[in-house]
Each structure stands twice: as structure tokens, then as C-alpha cells.
Length: 290
Ligand code: UTP
Image (cartoon, rainbow, N blue to C red; front, side, top):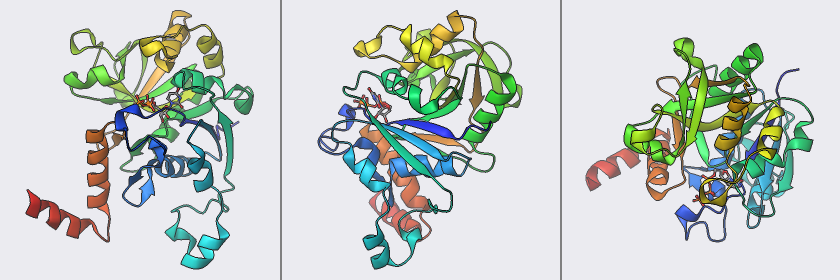
């Protein structure tokens, strides 16, 4: 059966963006016209995902409100496309919510999705990271295709980062040549220093898992910062001899993680510059300021 479920962990504290995230979710910060998490949802709807489970937590209720219908607002602004670029009704999209009582790590958030996925493979996407695709098929579709044709337990989107940035991400060790942009791995490390990094290929906030990941999470101990990390659970899969594969972002595809002030500024600037209405005027403004 085609994969149509996605789990979006959005329960983190967003400490690196305080005080902006003190009482509002990081995932609701705007990038241009839309909050980050709306890009994530619309990216996935465009690639065949119809059921979303948000793993939310305290102070995250505005995410639930955001994806509700709002007939009053729609009757005021007239066109629904002023609110979203996707017709959520026509696409028969369904939203589900589960709460993570304490933000104990991204693997702890995924663990809460076991009942929702019900024995099927599923997509995971972090709600604070936009993947900008140049064309079709998008990253999630390529992940799903590789996952279904390889039978791997986990399939991970990765992208190449400068060596000095490996300490910010999970980094994979390819086990074979990545012809065609997809390859098996035999290692993965969370936030390695440049000298210890097994490659420059960093995890890009999108995954496809079989339910085997829940067994691996259950067999994983808390790691860096006392949190339960997906990277550590994936390493457990590798230790068990499960196949784990990666799909690399193509040239022209970009990951925008808005987790730090600088990455947030970069994302906002790129999307504002690409805005067909205000982008050219914004570019003039930036030029005048520089
Ligand atoms: P991050 O580690 O980037 O987010 O998690 P964070 O923990 O909110 O950020 P800092 O380090 O405090 O600044 C990636 C995604 O996983 C979610 C986050 O909400 C984010 O969208 N997450 C993280 C959870 O849902 N639960 C957790 O326990 C941790």
C-alpha cells in the first residue's frame, strides 16, 4: 500500500530562538507569508501524503488552530488561496494530534506515533525545516520510492554541508557509491566535530521508516543532552543488520532549518526575495542597505 502518513514532531522548546519562542511555537514563525510548518505540510501533500500526525506539546496549540478550517476568515478574504496554496478539502487531508508530555528528544516524539502508523511505513518530517525542491519528483517522493523498492528499515534524506557545519547535524557514512543519488549507509553519528565526521552528508529532516524504528527506539538510551535521538535509534538498526539507505538532495534543492537566528534570517531573506509580488522591491531595499 502506498505510504500516505506523515509524522511531524513539533514539540521541541526552540531554545535557540528565545525569546521569539517563549510563548509561541518555533514552527509557527513566518517565512515570508507562511509559517514554517505550513511549507512542510504543503510540500508533503504535493507528494502523496494525506494523513498528518503532529506531535505537539505545551504552548503549541496555535499549530492546531492554524490547520483548522476558518469559514469566517475565508468569507472575509474571499479566496481560499489567500490562506493556503493547497486546497486541503479537495486533497482530503486529515490532521491528527498527539502530545509529547515533555520534550525528551526527536525519537521520543516519533515513538508516540506507533498507534497512528498501525504497522505501515511512514514519513517523518521536522516541522521546523523547509525543503525547497527545484522540480519533480520531490524529495519525499524519491524517499518513498527508494524505500519501497529497497525494503530498507529506514531511508533518510541527506544533503552536503561544509565540513565546519557537521557538528550541527546527524552525519552518515555511505557504504557504497551514491550513483543516482541513493545509497546504503553503514554508520551515522549525531553532531560530529569536523575531524570525526564520517562524511559531509548531513541528515535533512525527512525520513521514511518501517515500524521497525519503534523497536529500535525502545532499545536506545538517551544520548546528547539527555535526549532520545533518531540518529541513535537508526544506528541501532544498523547494529542489528537492518538496511538503512539515503537519498541525497539534488543540486538546486535546499534545506532551510530555521532553528537558529542566522538560519532563520537566511530562510526569510531567500523566500522574501523569491516572492513574485514584493521580492524585487525587497531586493532593491537590501541593495540600498548593503
Ligand atoms: P530541534 O532539536 O531542531 O528543535 O528538533 P528544538 O529542540 O525545539 O530546538 P532547540 O535545540 O531547543 O533550539 C527538530 C524538530 O523536532 C521537534 C522540534 O519541535 C523540531 O520541529 N522535537 C524536538 C520534538 O517534537 N520533541 C522533542 O523532544 C524534540
